[in-house]
Image (cartoon, one colour):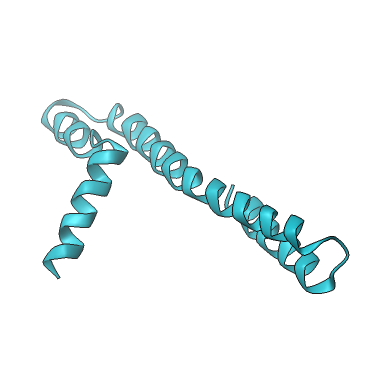
Length: 89
């Protein structure tokens, strides 16, 4: 998804600069790509969390329980903790 977003930004930027299509359409495309990248962040977080959970299942006993505890955080909880850390700075 990351490459799709970067490619889309470049694509619509070039359309905007070259004036091959009306600028409104180029700006609309850039807006859609920006909205899509927000969804991509959450999807990437969820994909990484699933990968970590799969790695946890390979462990045994207390190591597995600790690993599962660390990877059980939802995206919303992650965002909340991140915003709290930024406020503390």
